[in-house]
Image (cartoon, rainbow, N blue to C red; front, side, top):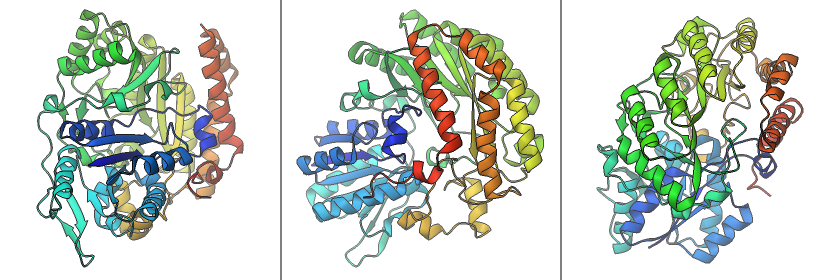
Length: 483
Protein backbone atom coordinates (compact mmCIF):
# COMPACT_ATOMS: atom_id res chain seq x y z
CA UNK A 1 0.00 0.00 0.00
CA UNK A 2 0.98 3.65 -0.41
CA UNK A 3 1.05 5.30 2.99
CA UNK A 4 1.63 9.00 3.74
CA UNK A 5 2.60 9.75 7.33
CA UNK A 6 1.99 13.38 8.32
CA UNK A 7 3.40 15.43 11.14
CA UNK A 8 1.24 18.51 11.72
CA UNK A 9 2.30 21.28 14.08
CA UNK A 10 0.62 24.31 15.57
CA UNK A 11 2.75 27.38 15.01
CA UNK A 12 1.99 29.87 12.29
CA UNK A 13 4.43 29.98 9.39
CA UNK A 14 5.71 33.36 10.55
CA UNK A 15 6.38 32.15 14.09
CA UNK A 16 8.03 28.92 12.98
CA UNK A 17 10.14 30.51 10.25
CA UNK A 18 11.39 33.15 12.67
CA UNK A 19 13.83 30.54 13.96
CA UNK A 20 12.89 31.06 17.58
CA UNK A 21 11.76 27.48 18.08
CA UNK A 22 13.59 24.24 17.43
CA UNK A 23 12.40 21.93 14.69
CA UNK A 24 13.34 18.27 14.73
CA UNK A 25 12.52 15.17 12.73
CA UNK A 26 9.29 13.37 13.77
CA UNK A 27 10.95 10.25 15.17
CA UNK A 28 7.67 8.48 15.95
CA UNK A 29 6.72 8.50 12.28
CA UNK A 30 10.27 7.48 11.40
CA UNK A 31 9.99 4.33 13.49
CA UNK A 32 6.59 3.47 11.99
CA UNK A 33 7.90 4.09 8.48
CA UNK A 34 10.77 1.64 8.99
CA UNK A 35 8.36 -1.11 10.00
CA UNK A 36 6.04 -0.41 7.06
CA UNK A 37 8.89 -0.31 4.54
CA UNK A 38 10.25 -3.61 5.83
CA UNK A 39 6.82 -5.12 5.17
CA UNK A 40 6.72 -3.95 1.56
CA UNK A 41 4.76 -0.70 1.76
CA UNK A 42 5.57 2.52 -0.12
CA UNK A 43 5.93 5.25 2.50
CA UNK A 44 6.36 9.03 2.56
CA UNK A 45 6.86 11.22 5.62
CA UNK A 46 5.38 14.71 5.22
CA UNK A 47 6.44 17.13 7.91
CA UNK A 48 5.01 20.63 7.94
CA UNK A 49 8.09 21.82 9.77
CA UNK A 50 9.74 21.77 6.36
CA UNK A 51 6.71 22.02 4.07
CA UNK A 52 4.17 24.76 3.51
CA UNK A 53 0.49 23.84 3.58
CA UNK A 54 0.34 23.98 -0.23
CA UNK A 55 3.41 21.75 -0.50
CA UNK A 56 1.89 19.29 1.96
CA UNK A 57 -1.33 19.09 -0.05
CA UNK A 58 0.58 18.80 -3.31
CA UNK A 59 2.70 15.93 -1.97
CA UNK A 60 -0.41 14.04 -0.85
CA UNK A 61 -2.20 14.63 -4.17
CA UNK A 62 0.78 13.48 -6.27
CA UNK A 63 1.48 10.46 -4.07
CA UNK A 64 -2.17 9.33 -4.19
CA UNK A 65 -1.94 7.27 -0.97
CA UNK A 66 -4.22 4.52 0.26
CA UNK A 67 -3.68 5.59 3.87
CA UNK A 68 -2.87 8.98 5.38
CA UNK A 69 -1.71 8.75 8.98
CA UNK A 70 -1.25 11.63 11.41
CA UNK A 71 0.76 11.77 14.59
CA UNK A 72 -1.44 14.04 16.68
CA UNK A 73 -0.77 16.14 19.75
CA UNK A 74 -3.50 18.06 21.50
CA UNK A 75 -1.80 21.31 20.52
CA UNK A 76 -2.05 20.29 16.87
CA UNK A 77 -5.32 18.33 16.91
CA UNK A 78 -7.37 21.06 15.25
CA UNK A 79 -4.88 21.37 12.40
CA UNK A 80 -4.77 17.59 11.96
CA UNK A 81 -8.55 17.50 11.64
CA UNK A 82 -8.47 20.30 9.06
CA UNK A 83 -5.95 18.44 6.90
CA UNK A 84 -7.85 15.17 7.37
CA UNK A 85 -11.03 16.86 6.13
CA UNK A 86 -9.15 18.05 3.05
CA UNK A 87 -7.86 14.49 2.44
CA UNK A 88 -11.41 13.13 2.51
CA UNK A 89 -12.51 15.82 0.04
CA UNK A 90 -9.60 14.84 -2.21
CA UNK A 91 -10.54 11.15 -2.12
CA UNK A 92 -13.18 9.71 0.27
CA UNK A 93 -11.65 6.24 -0.18
CA UNK A 94 -8.38 7.20 1.51
CA UNK A 95 -8.27 5.76 5.02
CA UNK A 96 -7.45 8.45 7.59
CA UNK A 97 -5.60 7.14 10.65
CA UNK A 98 -4.82 9.24 13.74
CA UNK A 99 -2.24 8.19 16.31
CA UNK A 100 0.01 9.88 18.82
CA UNK A 101 -0.71 11.24 22.31
CA UNK A 102 -4.00 13.02 21.56
CA UNK A 103 -5.52 9.99 19.85
CA UNK A 104 -4.17 7.69 22.56
CA UNK A 105 -5.63 9.66 25.47
CA UNK A 106 -8.91 10.61 23.77
CA UNK A 107 -9.45 7.75 21.29
CA UNK A 108 -13.26 7.60 21.19
CA UNK A 109 -13.56 11.38 21.07
CA UNK A 110 -11.00 11.56 18.25
CA UNK A 111 -12.70 8.80 16.27
CA UNK A 112 -16.04 10.58 16.64
CA UNK A 113 -14.80 13.16 14.15
CA UNK A 114 -16.33 12.44 10.76
CA UNK A 115 -13.05 12.52 8.82
CA UNK A 116 -11.27 9.94 11.00
CA UNK A 117 -11.59 6.26 10.06
CA UNK A 118 -9.15 4.62 12.48
CA UNK A 119 -7.38 5.50 15.72
CA UNK A 120 -4.09 3.88 16.72
CA UNK A 121 -3.68 3.97 20.49
CA UNK A 122 -0.27 3.60 22.13
CA UNK A 123 2.91 2.51 20.34
CA UNK A 124 2.17 2.44 16.64
CA UNK A 125 4.91 0.41 14.96
CA UNK A 126 3.43 -3.09 15.10
CA UNK A 127 -0.16 -1.83 15.03
CA UNK A 128 0.32 0.11 11.78
CA UNK A 129 1.89 -2.91 10.09
CA UNK A 130 -0.95 -5.21 11.12
CA UNK A 131 -3.77 -2.83 10.20
CA UNK A 132 -2.12 -2.04 6.84
CA UNK A 133 -1.94 -5.75 6.03
CA UNK A 134 -5.61 -6.15 6.93
CA UNK A 135 -6.60 -3.22 4.71
CA UNK A 136 -4.44 -4.55 1.85
CA UNK A 137 -6.32 -7.86 1.98
CA UNK A 138 -9.69 -6.18 2.44
CA UNK A 139 -10.15 -7.86 5.81
CA UNK A 140 -11.86 -6.56 8.94
CA UNK A 141 -9.76 -4.79 11.58
CA UNK A 142 -11.50 -6.73 14.32
CA UNK A 143 -8.91 -8.17 16.69
CA UNK A 144 -6.06 -5.81 15.76
CA UNK A 145 -4.78 -4.70 19.15
CA UNK A 146 -4.24 -0.99 19.65
CA UNK A 147 -6.93 -0.07 17.10
CA UNK A 148 -10.30 1.65 17.35
CA UNK A 149 -12.42 1.91 14.21
CA UNK A 150 -15.98 2.41 12.99
CA UNK A 151 -18.04 -0.52 11.73
CA UNK A 152 -20.50 -0.33 8.80
CA UNK A 153 -23.14 1.27 11.03
CA UNK A 154 -20.75 3.88 12.38
CA UNK A 155 -20.40 2.23 15.80
CA UNK A 156 -16.99 2.48 17.46
CA UNK A 157 -15.16 -0.83 17.90
CA UNK A 158 -12.33 -0.87 20.45
CA UNK A 159 -9.96 -3.82 20.07
CA UNK A 160 -8.15 -3.11 23.34
CA UNK A 161 -4.55 -2.08 23.99
CA UNK A 162 -1.48 -3.60 22.37
CA UNK A 163 1.29 -4.72 24.75
CA UNK A 164 4.29 -2.41 24.81
CA UNK A 165 7.44 -3.47 22.98
CA UNK A 166 9.67 -4.97 25.67
CA UNK A 167 13.07 -5.00 23.97
CA UNK A 168 13.81 -1.61 22.39
CA UNK A 169 17.06 -2.95 20.93
CA UNK A 170 14.94 -5.24 18.74
CA UNK A 171 13.35 -2.22 17.04
CA UNK A 172 14.41 -0.93 13.64
CA UNK A 173 16.04 2.49 13.55
CA UNK A 174 13.82 5.31 12.31
CA UNK A 175 13.74 5.82 8.54
CA UNK A 176 16.10 8.81 8.68
CA UNK A 177 16.42 8.72 4.88
CA UNK A 178 12.82 9.98 4.66
CA UNK A 179 13.63 13.11 6.69
CA UNK A 180 14.95 16.36 5.22
CA UNK A 181 17.64 16.37 7.90
CA UNK A 182 19.42 19.45 6.60
CA UNK A 183 16.25 21.52 7.11
CA UNK A 184 15.91 20.86 10.85
CA UNK A 185 17.46 23.23 13.33
CA UNK A 186 18.04 23.70 17.01
CA UNK A 187 16.73 26.55 19.10
CA UNK A 188 19.06 29.13 20.61
CA UNK A 189 19.62 26.67 23.45
CA UNK A 190 19.99 23.53 21.35
CA UNK A 191 22.23 24.76 18.54
CA UNK A 192 26.00 25.04 18.99
CA UNK A 193 27.28 25.28 15.40
CA UNK A 194 26.20 25.27 11.76
CA UNK A 195 26.31 21.46 11.66
CA UNK A 196 23.25 19.31 10.89
CA UNK A 197 21.19 18.36 13.93
CA UNK A 198 19.09 15.28 14.64
CA UNK A 199 17.01 14.19 17.58
CA UNK A 200 17.28 10.71 19.07
CA UNK A 201 15.39 8.85 21.79
CA UNK A 202 17.08 6.20 23.92
CA UNK A 203 14.25 5.05 26.20
CA UNK A 204 10.48 4.87 26.52
CA UNK A 205 8.43 5.33 29.65
CA UNK A 206 8.73 7.51 32.74
CA UNK A 207 8.56 6.49 36.42
CA UNK A 208 7.82 9.99 37.72
CA UNK A 209 4.47 11.46 38.75
CA UNK A 210 4.49 15.10 37.60
CA UNK A 211 0.85 16.15 37.43
CA UNK A 212 1.30 18.40 34.39
CA UNK A 213 2.93 15.72 32.22
CA UNK A 214 1.09 13.36 29.87
CA UNK A 215 3.59 10.50 29.74
CA UNK A 216 1.33 7.49 30.21
CA UNK A 217 1.47 6.54 26.52
CA UNK A 218 4.73 4.63 26.98
CA UNK A 219 4.01 3.40 30.50
CA UNK A 220 5.50 4.10 33.92
CA UNK A 221 8.14 1.37 33.62
CA UNK A 222 11.15 2.64 31.70
CA UNK A 223 12.49 0.54 28.84
CA UNK A 224 16.05 1.40 27.89
CA UNK A 225 17.99 0.92 24.69
CA UNK A 226 21.48 -0.40 25.31
CA UNK A 227 24.43 1.97 25.01
CA UNK A 228 25.69 0.03 21.98
CA UNK A 229 22.34 0.32 20.20
CA UNK A 230 22.17 4.06 20.84
CA UNK A 231 25.70 4.71 19.60
CA UNK A 232 25.13 2.54 16.52
CA UNK A 233 22.28 4.85 15.47
CA UNK A 234 24.31 7.97 16.23
CA UNK A 235 27.23 6.62 14.22
CA UNK A 236 24.92 5.85 11.29
CA UNK A 237 23.64 9.44 11.34
CA UNK A 238 27.17 10.78 11.73
CA UNK A 239 28.61 8.79 8.82
CA UNK A 240 25.67 8.63 6.39
CA UNK A 241 23.96 11.97 7.01
CA UNK A 242 26.83 14.10 8.37
CA UNK A 243 24.93 14.80 11.60
CA UNK A 244 27.25 16.31 14.21
CA UNK A 245 24.73 17.58 16.76
CA UNK A 246 22.16 15.52 18.68
CA UNK A 247 19.29 16.27 21.00
CA UNK A 248 18.23 13.41 23.29
CA UNK A 249 14.43 13.52 23.52
CA UNK A 250 14.13 11.23 26.56
CA UNK A 251 11.98 12.70 29.35
CA UNK A 252 14.95 12.16 31.66
CA UNK A 253 18.10 11.07 29.86
CA UNK A 254 20.07 10.82 33.12
CA UNK A 255 17.64 8.44 34.83
CA UNK A 256 20.08 5.51 34.74
CA UNK A 257 23.52 6.86 35.62
CA UNK A 258 25.46 3.74 34.59
CA UNK A 259 23.86 3.65 31.16
CA UNK A 260 24.63 7.34 30.58
CA UNK A 261 28.24 6.70 31.59
CA UNK A 262 28.35 3.73 29.19
CA UNK A 263 26.94 5.88 26.35
CA UNK A 264 29.56 8.55 27.05
CA UNK A 265 32.37 5.99 27.17
CA UNK A 266 31.29 4.55 23.81
CA UNK A 267 31.06 8.00 22.24
CA UNK A 268 34.64 8.63 23.32
CA UNK A 269 35.85 5.16 22.29
CA UNK A 270 34.43 5.46 18.78
CA UNK A 271 35.82 8.95 18.36
CA UNK A 272 32.52 10.57 17.39
CA UNK A 273 33.26 14.28 17.48
CA UNK A 274 29.75 15.54 18.18
CA UNK A 275 27.85 18.01 20.36
CA UNK A 276 24.70 17.04 22.19
CA UNK A 277 22.12 18.16 24.74
CA UNK A 278 19.57 16.40 26.94
CA UNK A 279 16.92 16.73 29.65
CA UNK A 280 17.71 15.94 33.26
CA UNK A 281 16.15 15.97 36.70
CA UNK A 282 17.82 17.84 39.52
CA UNK A 283 17.92 14.78 41.77
CA UNK A 284 20.11 13.00 39.18
CA UNK A 285 22.81 15.69 39.25
CA UNK A 286 26.32 14.65 40.25
CA UNK A 287 29.87 15.89 39.69
CA UNK A 288 31.05 12.54 38.31
CA UNK A 289 28.15 12.27 35.84
CA UNK A 290 28.38 15.84 34.56
CA UNK A 291 32.15 15.59 34.08
CA UNK A 292 31.77 12.43 31.99
CA UNK A 293 28.94 14.00 29.95
CA UNK A 294 31.06 17.05 29.22
CA UNK A 295 34.01 14.91 28.12
CA UNK A 296 31.69 13.06 25.71
CA UNK A 297 30.44 16.25 24.04
CA UNK A 298 27.42 17.36 26.09
CA UNK A 299 27.02 21.10 25.63
CA UNK A 300 23.57 21.78 27.04
CA UNK A 301 21.01 20.52 29.54
CA UNK A 302 17.35 21.32 30.17
CA UNK A 303 16.31 21.34 33.83
CA UNK A 304 12.66 21.37 34.86
CA UNK A 305 12.81 23.73 37.83
CA UNK A 306 9.10 24.71 37.60
CA UNK A 307 8.67 26.76 40.80
CA UNK A 308 10.41 28.43 43.72
CA UNK A 309 7.67 27.17 46.08
CA UNK A 310 8.21 23.82 47.76
CA UNK A 311 4.47 23.59 48.35
CA UNK A 312 3.74 23.98 44.64
CA UNK A 313 6.48 21.47 43.74
CA UNK A 314 4.91 18.99 46.15
CA UNK A 315 1.40 19.56 44.78
CA UNK A 316 2.64 18.92 41.23
CA UNK A 317 4.31 15.72 42.54
CA UNK A 318 7.65 16.77 41.16
CA UNK A 319 9.46 14.84 43.93
CA UNK A 320 12.31 17.33 44.12
CA UNK A 321 13.30 20.11 46.51
CA UNK A 322 14.14 23.75 45.98
CA UNK A 323 17.59 23.00 47.42
CA UNK A 324 18.17 20.31 44.78
CA UNK A 325 17.29 22.81 42.04
CA UNK A 326 19.83 25.31 43.36
CA UNK A 327 22.53 22.64 43.59
CA UNK A 328 21.86 21.09 40.17
CA UNK A 329 21.79 24.41 38.31
CA UNK A 330 25.05 25.56 39.94
CA UNK A 331 26.72 22.24 39.08
CA UNK A 332 25.40 22.23 35.52
CA UNK A 333 26.67 25.78 34.93
CA UNK A 334 30.11 24.56 35.97
CA UNK A 335 30.24 21.92 33.23
CA UNK A 336 27.94 22.85 30.35
CA UNK A 337 27.89 25.68 27.83
CA UNK A 338 24.12 26.19 28.00
CA UNK A 339 21.84 25.51 30.95
CA UNK A 340 18.12 26.06 30.36
CA UNK A 341 15.55 26.04 33.16
CA UNK A 342 11.79 25.85 32.62
CA UNK A 343 9.20 27.33 34.99
CA UNK A 344 5.40 27.03 35.15
CA UNK A 345 2.89 29.61 36.38
CA UNK A 346 -0.67 28.78 37.37
CA UNK A 347 -0.32 25.26 38.76
CA UNK A 348 -2.69 24.34 41.61
CA UNK A 349 -1.51 26.07 44.79
CA UNK A 350 0.30 28.81 42.88
CA UNK A 351 -0.37 32.43 43.81
CA UNK A 352 0.52 35.79 42.30
CA UNK A 353 2.97 36.36 45.14
CA UNK A 354 4.47 32.91 44.63
CA UNK A 355 4.84 33.51 40.90
CA UNK A 356 6.81 36.70 41.53
CA UNK A 357 9.06 34.74 43.89
CA UNK A 358 9.63 32.22 41.10
CA UNK A 359 10.75 35.02 38.77
CA UNK A 360 13.21 36.27 41.40
CA UNK A 361 14.34 32.68 42.01
CA UNK A 362 15.08 32.25 38.28
CA UNK A 363 17.21 35.40 38.35
CA UNK A 364 19.01 34.20 41.48
CA UNK A 365 20.01 30.74 40.19
CA UNK A 366 20.78 32.48 36.87
CA UNK A 367 20.80 29.73 34.22
CA UNK A 368 21.94 30.66 30.72
CA UNK A 369 18.35 30.58 29.50
CA UNK A 370 14.93 30.42 31.14
CA UNK A 371 11.52 29.61 29.70
CA UNK A 372 8.30 30.52 31.49
CA UNK A 373 5.02 28.79 30.67
CA UNK A 374 1.40 28.78 31.77
CA UNK A 375 0.01 25.54 33.23
CA UNK A 376 -1.75 23.61 30.46
CA UNK A 377 -3.93 20.56 31.28
CA UNK A 378 -2.87 18.17 28.52
CA UNK A 379 -4.91 14.95 28.11
CA UNK A 380 -3.18 12.05 29.83
CA UNK A 381 -2.02 14.22 32.72
CA UNK A 382 -3.39 14.37 36.24
CA UNK A 383 -3.85 18.11 35.73
CA UNK A 384 -6.20 17.39 32.83
CA UNK A 385 -8.20 14.93 34.93
CA UNK A 386 -8.56 17.63 37.58
CA UNK A 387 -9.75 20.14 34.98
CA UNK A 388 -12.36 17.70 33.63
CA UNK A 389 -13.53 16.83 37.14
CA UNK A 390 -13.92 20.53 37.92
CA UNK A 391 -15.85 20.93 34.63
CA UNK A 392 -13.30 23.43 33.35
CA UNK A 393 -12.80 21.45 30.12
CA UNK A 394 -15.31 19.77 27.82
CA UNK A 395 -13.71 16.46 26.90
CA UNK A 396 -15.83 15.99 23.75
CA UNK A 397 -15.00 19.42 22.38
CA UNK A 398 -11.31 18.90 22.99
CA UNK A 399 -11.19 15.39 21.58
CA UNK A 400 -13.35 15.34 18.51
CA UNK A 401 -13.40 18.85 17.12
CA UNK A 402 -10.21 20.47 18.31
CA UNK A 403 -12.45 23.29 19.51
CA UNK A 404 -10.43 23.60 22.70
CA UNK A 405 -7.07 24.69 21.31
CA UNK A 406 -3.94 24.11 23.34
CA UNK A 407 -0.91 26.31 22.77
CA UNK A 408 1.68 24.56 24.92
CA UNK A 409 1.86 26.98 27.79
CA UNK A 410 1.67 30.17 25.73
CA UNK A 411 -1.98 30.96 26.36
CA UNK A 412 -4.41 30.36 29.22
CA UNK A 413 -6.67 27.38 28.50
CA UNK A 414 -8.24 27.27 31.96
CA UNK A 415 -7.46 28.81 35.32
CA UNK A 416 -6.10 26.01 37.51
CA UNK A 417 -4.84 28.21 40.37
CA UNK A 418 -5.87 31.37 42.14
CA UNK A 419 -4.11 33.46 39.47
CA UNK A 420 -6.44 35.07 36.93
CA UNK A 421 -6.01 34.67 33.17
CA UNK A 422 -4.90 38.24 32.55
CA UNK A 423 -2.37 37.99 35.39
CA UNK A 424 -0.92 34.75 34.00
CA UNK A 425 -0.34 36.32 30.59
CA UNK A 426 1.22 39.33 32.28
CA UNK A 427 3.46 37.09 34.40
CA UNK A 428 4.93 35.25 31.40
CA UNK A 429 5.74 38.51 29.64
CA UNK A 430 7.15 40.09 32.79
CA UNK A 431 9.19 36.99 33.64
CA UNK A 432 10.91 36.95 30.26
CA UNK A 433 11.62 40.68 30.31
CA UNK A 434 12.89 40.66 33.91
CA UNK A 435 15.14 37.67 33.28
CA UNK A 436 16.61 38.63 29.91
CA UNK A 437 16.78 42.43 30.09
CA UNK A 438 19.14 42.56 33.08
CA UNK A 439 22.39 44.41 32.45
CA UNK A 440 24.36 41.67 34.24
CA UNK A 441 22.75 39.02 32.03
CA UNK A 442 23.37 40.95 28.81
CA UNK A 443 27.03 41.49 29.70
CA UNK A 444 27.41 37.80 30.56
CA UNK A 445 25.99 36.73 27.19
CA UNK A 446 28.18 39.20 25.31
CA UNK A 447 31.25 37.82 27.06
CA UNK A 448 30.43 34.34 25.72
CA UNK A 449 30.39 35.32 22.05
CA UNK A 450 32.86 33.07 20.26
CA UNK A 451 31.60 33.06 16.66
CA UNK A 452 29.15 34.58 14.20
CA UNK A 453 26.75 31.66 14.80
CA UNK A 454 26.54 32.69 18.46
CA UNK A 455 25.64 36.24 17.43
CA UNK A 456 22.99 34.87 15.05
CA UNK A 457 21.46 32.76 17.82
CA UNK A 458 21.43 35.73 20.18
CA UNK A 459 19.54 37.75 17.58
CA UNK A 460 16.94 34.96 17.31
CA UNK A 461 16.67 34.85 21.09
CA UNK A 462 16.11 38.59 21.32
CA UNK A 463 13.40 38.32 18.65
CA UNK A 464 11.66 35.62 20.67
CA UNK A 465 11.63 37.69 23.87
CA UNK A 466 10.44 40.80 22.04
CA UNK A 467 7.68 38.85 20.30
CA UNK A 468 6.51 37.52 23.66
CA UNK A 469 6.11 41.09 24.88
CA UNK A 470 4.26 42.68 22.00
CA UNK A 471 2.59 40.07 19.81
CA UNK A 472 -0.81 38.53 20.60
CA UNK A 473 -0.60 34.83 21.48
CA UNK A 474 -3.79 34.11 19.53
CA UNK A 475 -2.31 35.67 16.40
CA UNK A 476 0.91 33.71 16.84
CA UNK A 477 -0.90 30.42 17.05
CA UNK A 478 -3.72 31.06 14.62
CA UNK A 479 -3.90 28.00 12.40
CA UNK A 480 -1.91 28.30 9.18
CA UNK A 481 -4.27 25.69 7.72
CA UNK A 482 -7.26 27.99 7.74
CA UNK A 483 -7.81 30.35 4.84
